[in-house]
Image (cartoon, rainbow, N blue to C red; front, side, top):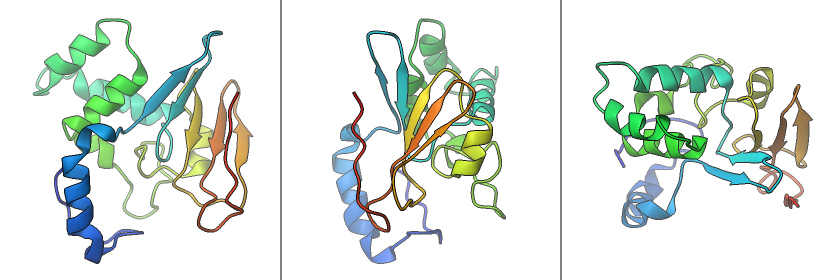
Amino acid sequence: FPVTIGLCSGYRPSMMHDLYDIFKIHRRLFQFSHLEEDIEGDRILWTHAGVTNSWYGELLMDVRHENYRFRGLFEEILNREHRIDEVLNLALEVNLDLIYNVDQDSGGIDLNASPIWVRPETLMKDPILMYDQVVGHTPMKDIEVRLSKFETVYFIDTQEYGNKSVLILP
């Protein structure tokens, strides 16, 4: 993990060294995304803040660029039947700049804001197609379930400021 020191919401300088050591030692236990598929083929993508179709399209364009240094690694995944979580997790592993993409002025309301920063209103305007999503990031009073044309997004960050409810999916 690269150490980037800066000010952002939730940043606690006093915890940096302890958390850095924990994440570095146990890096393989942490994933950027997780995908579940049920027997009917429904897919649920778990990320921190959600994946927009615009951001994911930009990611695919970037990693397929002829001059991108990790293009071969991504081609191995993209040239076979792959899972989106493999692509997202590899993007974090190679430290792709796009992972940290956030618009400076708005804090995640741009359609190209990353799965670390995107806000619920933006995610609902342009969710990645054919995936239901479970996300945290934005504190909610209660779990919220929002529907787009074909996708469902569950906003589950209720622990600190909400009623501490828990999402249980069948």
